[in-house]
Structure formats: structure tokens, C-alpha cells
Length: 525
Image 1 (cartoon, rainbow, N blue to C red):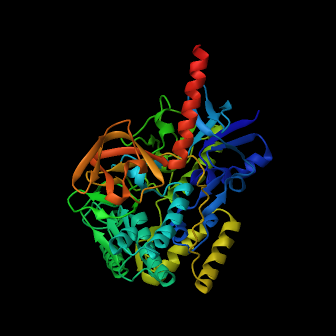
Image 2 (image 1 turned 90 degrees about the horizontal axis):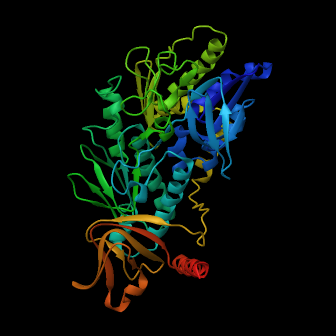
Image 3 (image 1 turned 45 degrees about the vertical axis):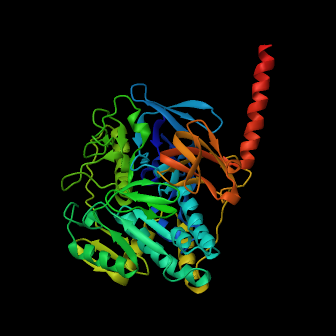
């Protein structure tokens, strides 16, 4: 009888689980099904290089089908898990639902974006969890330079070219350093941008960046923290320590104790939260922060044959505490789970997780990095080569390894490809949630393309200092309310949230609503 193993998630855990079960699948007797929302895996170690055009966007993507074969991949949404019935419920893009029975279950579903970190984050800040988010940010960065290049307003140009990174961990420091170096290079191809215009600000709640290497981390490396701090400052990054982002609008970022910073680009590198699917599984033991609790074999407590690994799991560390939520531990845990599923199926005791890690590091921009390997510290160019080589070694497919080498070879010769590769269509119907703080302009003479529906708060039509009209929840504001010759504008009074859509789309929506109301009227007659 075929032994059925279902793997939830197509990320790092799935890579090594399916790799470890490859021979068993080919011999027969074991059937492995991977359920993932996408048919690709994002290699997060090189996101900073993709954002700043060192490498092509597709280079950080690995084909999930190529990674997991000969296992079966189902691209679908996970809608439920029944631990008692041993089934997983899924739904595809067409709404078709099915239930997958299993003999063993592997939960490696990763994490989800943490939208509640500060006000306005989902509306106006960028996150780096999904490829869609990262690709959108890459295009946005180029667009900021395009817009700044042709404006004559110095304050507006600096607002367009101010990039704020929230979070001073590995991801935040890597991104801030890469952005500062990227801005230096882009200045050469945009004549309207001066050397003093681009600005990269790193906001961190702690007293120093890189808490993973500080006293609160598993290992304490003050020398590496000091080098990273100095290097970031040398690259032009402004460090704002002991401060928190409290809110974002289209025009600025608000801080807890410091003045707001005018900007149109805020990037959240604060972290993620457990995937919502795990919270919806009845009987699944969860930690205080919502991750799946396992024993030292990666088996879920109280559920034999159910395993969890990666970012969504709390796995005991061999030296005490729990394993960090980083890729190398997810890969190693996946390899252990593959072995343990086979041992469990044969009635043998599962092995314990014994990987303690070999180091950590971060790229800081302009061919410099910090690294700690087996307790030894490295900085500068040598650390950059070592850490980059290590990340390259773990890229799961050979075609992507070759593409990385090609990109790294080509860009120093031809320069970075600063092209805005937008795939959106101006005619696509899109609704954007917006957030404004007191006094910020919602509509002025320049806002001719959009209308706003107020869903929270109130706004006011102003002409200089005179109030002409007030607007509340459910009311619409747009160009027709603004007399351009009198420099009128609609401003927020307190915190205001709106839904924004293009003027053309608003007209189409109005026609649709009118048609639907007519249909309803005819049906009632």
C-alpha cells in the first residue's frame, strides 16, 4: 500500500524534504504531494541585489516543480487541515475544492506579512516577503529617480529620493547599504539629480543595529556590529537608533519621538508573523507567538506522524533555546524530516535535530560584508566573498546558480539595468487604500487622475486659509471639487482613510452601479 506524505508549503522545507525522499518515491511505496500557492520559490538571500539591479528579477526564482520532482506539486490555496481525519483541504484559482488524505503531514508553510506593525503599512509601505512585493519595489525605486529627474521643486525632489528602511536587523542593514550604493550609481544617469538629493534612512528600535549579533542574540559579536555601523555611515546611510516607525502616509513616515520624515518610500524589514493557516488547525499546539511547537525530532507535540519545520515551527536548538527562523535551519530541518518520515513509516524511532549552525553574516553594500563562521569574525571584501559564496552554494537549482554567475559577470561590464519593468495596465481596475494624517493634502490641482471615497475621518476643502466645504465618511472628493485658479485643495482633518481609484475608472463604476440599480428596479416591478 502506498504511503502518502503531504507537504504544506513550497519553500525551503519542501526543497530538502522532497530531496531526501527522492529515492523512496522512485522506488515506489511512497507518494509525496507538495501544496504551494506559487509554482516558484523565492531565494531571499539575494533580494537586495535584485532590488538594486545587480541581478535580474527572475534569477531569485527557482522552479518549484524542478525542485520537488519526482514529488507531485499542486498549486492551490490551503483552506483547512483536519488532524483527526488526516486530510488537507485545498482550493484552486477556479474555486474547485478537494481533500487530500495523508498518512504523514509536513507543515513547512513559512510566515506571512505582519501588516499591523504600524499604521499605514499595508497601504503605503513596501514589504519584502513575496516576489510580487519585491518586484513592485524594484520598479518603484527606478520610478522615484525618473520623477525626481524632471521636477524643479527641490523639496519634492528630496522627498522622492528619500528612502526609509524600518528595522535594523540583517535584512534592513543589507537593504540600506545596497540602496545607498545604488543611489550613488543612479545619480550618474539622471542629470537632474544632485549628489545631495538621495537619502537613505535606517530606523531601528534598539540602541544598535544587528541585534542578532548583540547581547540579545545567540552569540555576541560587538566588533562586527561596530564595523557594520561604521560601514553603513560611510556609505551615507543615516542611522536613527532607539526610534520606531508609528505610521506612514503617501507623503511621510511618522516616528515615535522624532519629527516626521518627508518620503514616498518606506520599506518594512521588521519581520513576519506565523502563517494564518496554522492558527486555524484545531488541536495544533502553538507557542505564544503562534508558531507550531515540536519536539527535538521536529515532530509536532501530541501528533505522531505530523512534522513541522522552518519559520512556522518552534524547534529546540541542540545547544538550548530554539532554532532561529532563517533559511539554513529550515533546509536542515527539512532534511531531518525527510529521514524521520521514512523511519516513522518503518516503525523506528525518529532522529533528533543536531544542526547547531555554522555562522551568520550580512552584506553591507559596495562589496563589503560582515560574517561569523564557526566563531571566527570576518569583515570587508573577504567577508563579502565568503558570505556570497555560501549563499550561492545553497541555491537549490543549477540553472539559477549559472544565471547568478552570469549576472555577476555581466553587470560590472555593462552597468546596472535601471529599467522600470511595470506589468500593470492603466486600464486595469484597481482600488487603493490610502491613509492621511492631519493637514496632509488629499486632492489638489495636481491630483487630476484620481478620486477618493472617504471611509474613515473627515476632510475639508480649503482655499488658502478659508474653509469652503466639509466631507465625511461615504463622500467622494476629486478634481471637480478643486478650483485650480484659486489654488484650492482638499486636506485631511485628523487621520483620514480613503479608497482611491482613477477618475476614468470611477466613471465606469458609476455606470455599472446605475445599470445594476436599474436591473434591481426592473426585477422588483
